[in-house]
Length: 386
Image (tube, rainbow, N blue to C red; front, side):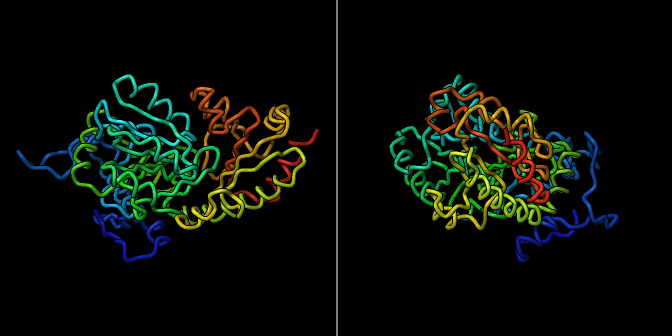
């Protein structure tokens, strides 16, 4: 379909134009929404390449090629949610296989691993990935993969992707990196040795809080066949309309990420000086424990900021009083959101692991949007006032 941009252009141009930048039969600049469940066969044993949308759809196909282009991979796959993408990725492993997981991770991922796949014989160890020695110590003979989020959710820990890749590859395993927070605009894990990249496309990639999607990018032909079979058989493939919305959002990714980053830097600094705040977690601080790693592997910071209140009572005050910033669960959209991980994103994680990761009753997470930073700071100021 159409004319391929290819990797000869800059990342910013590829973000805007995608893998296919016009539809050839009409010249349409936007990929059409092929809202069809089934496709006509030209004849017996013949196919246009599209038979049934659960297996392959022309709109989704363009998104899959686009995310592969942006993440510098060979193959892309699009799913109905980020959880659907991760669930399909587990299908390349077998019961009895051991996977090391960074403990400071989205609660839904923890629930999927420990609440579901553990029942079928998969083995998981959750470790503090901010200290590389913990990952090394967790290796077992049956370890087949390392699954990391970097930066992590919600404590903003940065894990050395190259070092993890070297370690797990020597062990004969695979590295899976959740790149949702940085996006391919700021970070490309495949270039750093990761075997797979996963995204919740719902977040920064789509960027408008109006659809769900999940994405996988990799470059291995054998695993691609397994993942395609899982995508088709489990049925978690992305719809044509949601693929269109995700592609539409991606076109402004570079512009949005710059604004998210600039706003977050200002607000993180403001929070650091607030008398009610004990500690701020933000990857852009030079005194961040893994700042050097972040600057080595990422080209910038995202719009995520977490912080501890000194007093738990101020959490409820903030959540009740915010007006411009919305108290809601999610991140990465153009609107600024405040989330209370204890009861929202990380409620599924057992208390001992949650506290070990740093998710306590005084932690608040901000997803800084692209509004005027002064307005956001004024809203936080009034909301945090007695």
